[in-house]
Image (cartoon, rainbow, N blue to C red):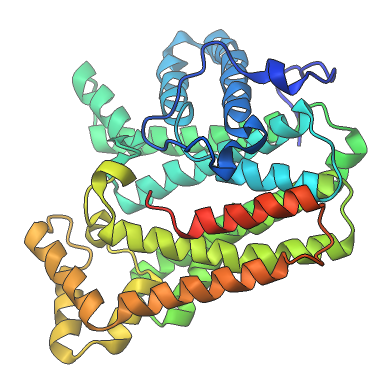
Length: 388
């Protein structure tokens, strides 16, 4: 990994000085004052890091061409004050659980995961043809509108998709940049680089497996769980924990504990996401009701419903799933199948089972610092019972 911008001073700042004077609160994903995501004032500190980082990158783009301004604007609107900052939280508490002291350097390193996550979301929206993300137009739709409104030549949709792919790639590069410029010791970064690389390989592999499932028309619950594990679960929980732990010099026993806790929790998190994609409140999730159904996502929820469906129900699912023009009546019909077949109940039982496995792995005898262990327990509950 090679940084493209000057590293910030490695001088440690006190946590009290980390709050950005112009920081805005996220209206689409508010964290309650007692939320574990607010522990150690982490969410505000990550926001501050991201804001400063993007401010440092804007002149780099401007020096190439002022025409790159819309890219910087789109990323700032997409990234700042939005999202739960769950992945940085797991990275930070992975560090603390392995004995690392609180510092601005680890917060900056953890914030790099938000750029990786942005890459995944921007590309995912292109592949799914999503219209919105976090209550706003998806990035590819934003650039299609820019093309259309500017009266440029060519196809606005193709321009939008291409611009979004490039912006996602830029996020992937900048994730490297932010990690290596965080101010952590070179030997810690060298140890953590393979962890970060593995996270990205697994993420891209999971995205392809998801794409393949759509092409194959879906399969078993087992295949859908494999997609969930590699597309989302591992880079949401286990990977960030391992990254933070490795940066802090975690023992093998601690990293093994993080795996035992992180994999089932990541899968439970994704299963909850699948349920919200069908049954969630658009005012809370920021996406239209039933959008996952219109996009034809072959989730564990869909696979479980088809496994239990009678011929009429199965035919209804196959007829409506993936219809981009699916109306509210069609959404309601598919929801009814998922409830009546027991598919929804089955996925809820999996979430409960996986959450239990995760909490058992982080029990009182786990080789994790006690303060971090308690936060990780509360994060497990928050990640699996969320409504957004």
